[in-house]
Image (cartoon, rainbow, N blue to C red):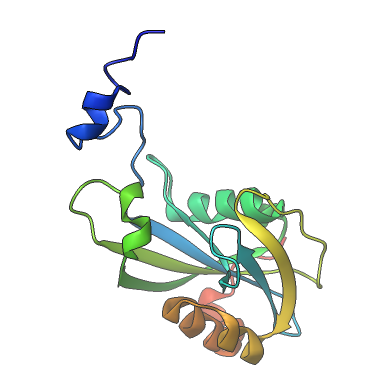
Length: 175
């Protein structure tokens, strides 16, 4: 079978990138999912076992940040965020993208802007994971959850949870 010019050895040797690859936008959401008792949902990454985190994901073209948060929650947990209390915490962090994940972004992109949301669910609900993204999940009291996540921005967001939950400015809308 002939080798395609877009995938053949010359293409890889010259350092060219595949044309069909869709680069991530360096804008994302972090969604802390929690109960009224402040138990936090943590997900273990499939590509990095032992790395625990909240729901995260990059914005798709044309999406609002709230739409990104809703989509990522649905994709990673099967929770419909529209049925619960999703709140924009009006907090964003700029961080350096880990070198191991930079290939997902356009050339030269080294930083991402992450926007933080909270999603309150009524109790520790059953989660349906996307096995391509996460291995396991667990519900953890907020202080312990903050110690277990690998990302400083995720840790910071979880530590803000009691204040965010009490704030009428970020309370979101009830279902």
